[in-house]
Length: 386
Ligand code: CTP
Ligand code: MG
Image 1 (cartoon, protein in one colour):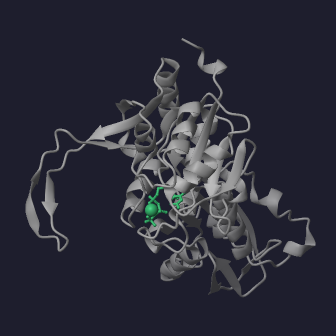
Image 2 (cartoon, protein in one colour):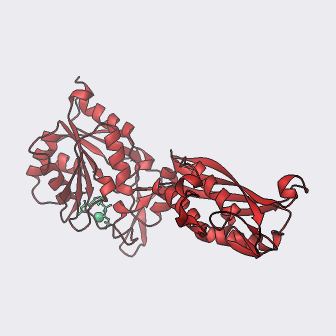
Image 3 (tube, protein in one colour):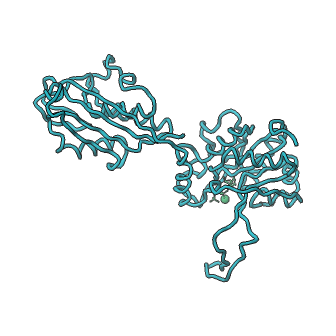
């Protein structure tokens, strides 16, 4: 048995389909699920298993995002059918043939490196073709074209076959040469038409093919499970000075004093910005918007909050919940609480039930009790790729 490391293993990911059944505006393989493109999940799994090159077969008018075209990825044009697209992918490898090629649907983002290794191990052990498969669990019925029930179909002799399907490259390339221009459902069928036997290994329900609109939330739940929640906290205080209003969580409140600070001194949002930055480990508000920088004088804190939210998005994170506590004797916050909540939710593009704004006093103790200043603390829960 040869060492895996000694085998050259390449992949062909077919991504030239239009995803008509899935709808959704752009082809399903380029939509985002749990912070990554659908095809990006498979590219990552192959790369994790040291597969190289990864040939992505795509329609010339719909190429993968730059983030999915890193080192090791080659993009070639697709064909009219899946079979034609695979053929183009295999052809791109012909000049420097690998030992093994894994052929995979871009529409199956639940691929993991372990599955790649398990398939390659079969070829290492002498198989010429290997694929993951699962039994059927639902009852099967035959129907006519109108959907009228005709009878039962025995499921005991049936299996569902997934991708990736692994082949000795020389075998599958020869098989594609033999079958001519016919279209097949998968590549095992091509190999079989050329007389090759396949080894089936246990499949993975996560490898389901995104086909219909309702498949997307299911996959989002499966892949989103690989995310971890992080909590960040923030605190801010500003001194009272002359003025006629304060701005708290984006809401202007008439008051007999104002808050001093380089921007609009919105302590609620400043604490919240620090909480969000804390959750993603991105420093603090002063680092992003130095108080010494005149461009932030009198700035609307909405700018800071939007910036923090943008940084979360850039890291493929998602703000799950935020909670702000304002600490002061006066002004009374209660009448403005709902407005603050709505404004914060609006800026963060969150439903209002994921935003909490609370208030408390310090029972007249300390600088807050003496109304020398106003303080706020905040917590932000952010979900990030694990
Ligand atoms: N595919 C391809 N070239 C084609 C047709 C399909 O590369 N001419 C790819 C798809 O991008 C997908 C895989 O083959 O990754 C499986 O095909 P399917 O699930 O049928 O995807 P679509 O053809 O895109 O979807 P639909 O049939 O709903 O239009
Ligand atoms: Mg199709």
